[in-house]
Image (cartoon, rainbow, N blue to C red; front, side):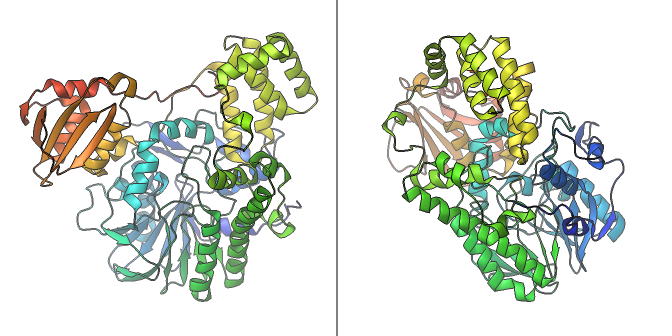
Length: 601
């Protein structure tokens, strides 16, 4: 790999069109609490220190750039106000907002900066490019009174995927996201440097207003506030529901998160559905065919735009080839009998890709992406019989420590491997020491030192986040998870989805000897949902036709359901049957721990 640090093209493009920013770059919520703060990143103005990988340091310098930028006539971006970008397209009357960031406070601050320089234009349309929280969570910052008559566009399947990713597995994803994004780390050359995809995420108010118009097929055309837009649906790429779109009048192409200035994730470290790099590559190729001849600027929901047809073609070809090469070569080696870790160890990109800045692993990595592709096709099992029935981590650790001759021997060996520079095996050995003896401060301290060294050397921002957060927790304990994507989304969920969030909290062993049925008659939705507890599973039936004994019937509206789920009981609600059944339901629900341990048992 021969990266050209003298190439300043990305810096020129990241600065191009700059209009203004806010100073200091600190965004607060209504009570004065800081939700986004770039004031600690001054160290990026200095020379790269030994505690940061030089390539990641360069990326951090680029993604720290912030403010209002002109992309082309009529199209502006707010960059560096959150992990993602917010794009603003001027229409006949107002402005169309694309991807209103993670939190309402940051989106409102970005819109205010735009209006300060472009006038008090109303928001006349919103577009969600895809179903990840950093592309819709701040919608109430641009539509504070709700949707009204403003059209909101999203790819077909958006709501189902947004709920699946941000709510159903939200607790585990948020906990792992604390590691991935380094939320608990100080902003410093020894701590959080960037997220690779952006400088960092915000911690403000998150919400969701459901879309009003589904984009269902490639070639679909819609006009918002006089602006014609041509869409390309790209399901199964960076998100299960995602889309690119073209502005023919502006000769501008929005690439959502399908083509950014780094290698992206096939399987993000916080957890998600495994993405399809083959489809991803094919949709990038389709975008080249559909739009590039009529495009002078390409922009995305992260990073900076690319201007000029030749530069756009080159950028998209690198991105296209990157995902297809990963896919095909992983399959080639998989079919030769190699396992995921073996493929990851042997994998090499061809020179044109390896030497491209836009193919570097600041957010995704070759190492964990090829393991994800292996998992996509063959699952978790590596084919070796010994992998079928392994002990869980703590039981496995105690046996490893015993086999080595005790905790002192494992610690000595771990230190020796670390001193020799084999940090990877040192981490593996010392992990067993910590899990076998969680109260051993020496084991925790040595493993923390190893994680710190691994973090300092990592080009990948999310790997750095995991290593350094793991080290921090080994030294000082678990810090609270600062961000919850799922908590602000309840209003937008359907009643079916709300009941699904209850069902996944049922403690099966505690519920297996109970059974009951509750009918929920929704007067505003004109249908009934029956919840049946059966063999420890909570079954949801819409408009049940089977006659059965119902223990409790509740007549209510969806807003009243939110109150019941919030713990308000049945006060003021019409109901028949045994109200204690509701108590029995809540008694079998677990409350997930948002700070469950990761580097300790």
